[in-house]
Length: 305
Image (cartoon, rainbow, N blue to C red; front, side, top):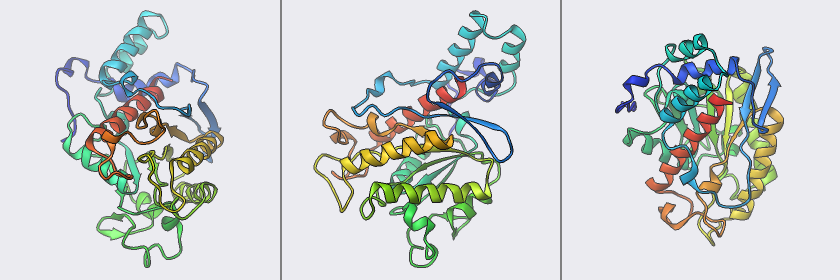
């Protein structure tokens, strides 16, 4: 349903196979962290830097298929991989815009709900039929870890298989899911400090890892909001502080960090008007096209590092 091959049939078999390159090429970015999991297996996850200013999405990878193809050809031409390795990569998988996300679950609040809707209606999205979404409007990390999550907060907790469940319990039941992309903060920061939110977010992620220690964790930065908007402790200032804390935590724990916020902001550090659907926090299809592009770029860095 989501796969979009267009004229790429001649390139069939790369993306999943390109992960094999990680056997041959060591991580090159200074934002790649190596840790040891409970199983003793090393995990390398890219932590994208925050620059403190708006970034141009036009400079990001727009076609993951072409970018990965050029990467493979260029590395072979440069002698970084042998013909045998090249053929092994070429014929061991399927290249597409979204193979990296086929085994992923996206966890979050209304912003993630909106991104799921975008993916369901755009054939070039990063989602496949097997990509999962575990999100619900008004959800928060604080609610997700609370003792009354399934009672008082049942109306904002994500459902899985038709039932409201703790996020870690839902993910523990998901087959063929090896990555978690998580984006919370909007609803947390209305009533919590960035430091309190960070603590709740860490607790939630560790609860998920306690039942799925093999899961790769990728934290998506909290998107900025429109200029002048605020609610309780939620503001662009508190979002920046929270994102810096999230980035530092990801680096310390070996989790990935996706710098989304700076690709949605304008020169004023706020959400660009054309990306706002309600003059507050919610976003338009144009904004989700940026999500899609940022995530493709992130996948490229993870695969090729």
